[in-house]
Each structure stands twice: as structure tokens, then as C-alpha cells.
Image (tube, rainbow, N blue to C red; front, top):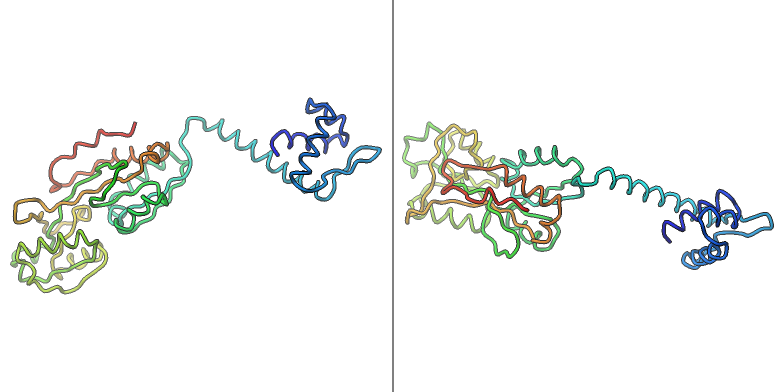
Length: 302
């Protein structure tokens, strides 16, 4: 069934006469009757009862008429929407994002994007980067904003580069670090290995690990209270007033971590996805200790 059938049923309902209905839809009566038979065969039901005075809808025919009227209105509303919003960006967008990036930075991007593209429905799924990555691969999310390096043959855009820092409050700043408690936190395996490497190279493994937490914000709260020191990425230090020292490995290499957008090339062509990527790129993140300047800010998606 299609729009012609909807118009045909509406004409029959109005005239209750096949000849008059055929005239209204510019069809011959035989063509109209053929169309009715095709509808009845498709739906496996009788739509009309033919009488000497005209036609009458059966009970199932009335249901078909009701459903077709609803469908016709939906199509009409759709056409009006498409005409009204021609050239605008709308649709749905599902984004996987690392917990910390969502908490400390993405709000600015979301606010601006929502103002520019209010017709887009966005769903965010926050998780650890290593859990977001397979969802991008499996197409359950449109793009991932993830810290760390992953094997990827699609679109990969560098958003930020931040240093890992030794953080403690001012009261502990004059005390040798090895004499202070270490506040540990759980993270992905790659980051954990790098944190362990830095502590080993800097002879900090002998520091007492007082407590292990699973969130940066909780870790920072204990640091503020002077309960020890921690290794914290710059993204979480925007408003922190205590002691911050960037970390370096023994070979002089800075302990940094990069955040990327991972997106399949074909998905990035969707207008709402492309617009979000460009908005994220526009919201530049610069960190005091974040390494060399990032050269990719101008790489907008064309």
C-alpha cells in the first residue's frame, strides 16, 4: 500500500460510491476496482461491501481506513518537517566518552552544540576508554572520545595532550615526596603501567599506598585534605590551587596522555556527527604542561 491507496480510501469514504471516488482520484472505475482487489489480497481481508446504493466499509475496512488516515497524516507531517527544516541538521547522535573528559571538559562542547543544533538528540555513554573502543568498532555508538592509542583505520583526531602531574596540597610541599602517603587510583591497564613505571624510575614505590580509589574526583578530594599525594592528569586540575608538578620519565620524556576522537569514516559523513566533531575541534584545550602545541585544530571535517 502507498499514498495513492490512502487517497483512494479517503475518496471512497467521502463519496461511498466507486464511480465518484474514481473521478476524484483521476482513475477509471476499473482501475480503481483493480487497486481495491490488490489491497484486499495484500491485507488478506475484505475492505468493502458493495450494495445497490454504493459501498460500505466492513469492520476490518474501517480499521484499514483508520490506519491509513493515520499513516497519511504521518507522511504529510514528515513532508512538512523536511520542508521546514531543509538545510538544518537534525537526527540522533550517540557518543562514547571517557569519564574524566566528560566530567571536566565536554560540557562546553555540549552546550554550544545544543544551541546550534537543537534538533539533534544526543545520547552519551560514559565509561573507560578501553570499553568504549569496541563499541565504536561494533557501531553501537557513532564516535568515541578516548584517551590513549588504539589501532584504528578510520577517522582519528587529536583533541588534547595533557601531562600527568604529581599533586599535593601546599602543606605537604616541603616534605620529601617519598615520606608522604601515595593515593592510588584504578585506571586502564596502559595508564596503570605508565604510572607504575614513573614511580619505579623515580624511586616512589616505597611510598605507602594509603588508599586506592576508582575516581579522580575522589582522589583529588583526599589530596586537598592533605592526606597524601597522587598522580593526576591535567584535565582534572583546572581549579586546583595546590602544588602541581609535571611528570617526566628517566629518559627525559614527558609523561603525557592524548585524547582522540575515534570515528568510522563513513559515520563521520553524517551531518550531525560531522558537526559535533567540528565543534569539539573548535573547543581547543591547552594545558600548561601538555607538551608541544597541537597542530590539528584547523583540521575541520569538510
